[in-house]
Length: 174
Image 1 (cartoon, rainbow, N blue to C red):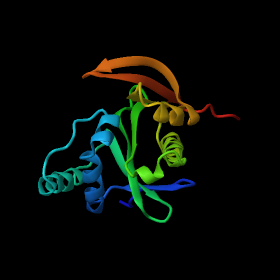
Image 2: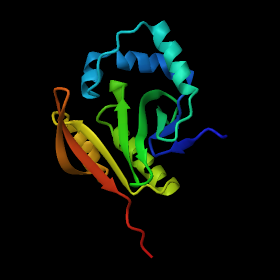
Image 3: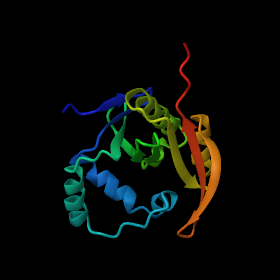
C-alpha cells in the first residue's frame, strides 16, 4: 500500500514514522502542550516511549488515521488525525497539534485543518467532522472558525471545559 501524502499550501500531511518519535516525545512531555491538548503530561522515559510508539505504528486501524505535519521543506512541526470514525453516522473527530511553537499563529494550523478536511470529504463518505477544544484556547477556536467550524455545545470532563465545534461536508453544486 502506498504511503498517503496530502499536500496543502503550507504543509504536507504524511503517514507517521519512527523518525517522528523524538519530536512527538518532546511535545508530549511539554507541560503547556499537554495542557492545550487536555492530556496528562507524559513521564515515561524515551526508551519506553519509543518502544510503545513503534509498536503502535505497526497496527493498522480503520477507526483512526494519524498524520505527521511537515512544512513544505520537510520540517516536522506537528500531528493531526481523524478518529472515532463512525461510518454508520458518517462522522469522525478531528485532532491537531502544532508542537513547534515557531509555527504558531502563522497559518499552518489552518492549512492543516483545511487540507485534512478536503482530503476527508474527497476520499471518504463522512459528512460531519467534529472536535473539542478548550474553552480557554481562543487561538485554536479562531483557527477552527476560519476553517468553517461552528460551535454546537460545551462539555465539562476531567476538570476541563471544552467548546464543541462541527463542520459538515460542503453541499455539492450541480
